[in-house]
Length: 153
Image 1 (cartoon, one colour):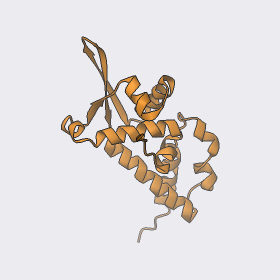
Image 2: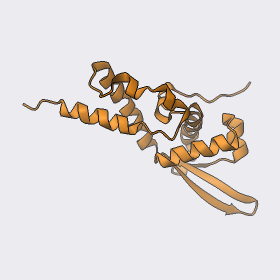
Image 3: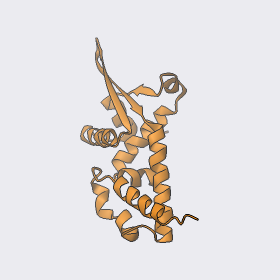
């Protein structure tokens, strides 16, 4: 029986790429393992293991890792060993949760019509192929609009 990677719509929307979302989902999975928790969240994987688990090519893995590092979600550390270099990974789960919560807030703003540019500004399908496009600017813009609409008594 083959195992798969469970990817949520929110992860795809957050990253702007199904491949980055798949890599992220696998990082989340490994971060939840008890042994990894005992290592303060650090786990290691070879390129071949990533390919076996995510079906991502070397290039796709590197692109996903770069996006996650740039977003502040992923840290990497290299360990020299007699058999080669071991690459360790650490996922910032607190930041991930915050980013997912921002997506939920953004959805509420779209539903109420408070977000500038409307739904099209948030769900531009042309951004889906470019994981470098970070949608957090739109989230922050929506948050600012929402906060400015608060009426203080």
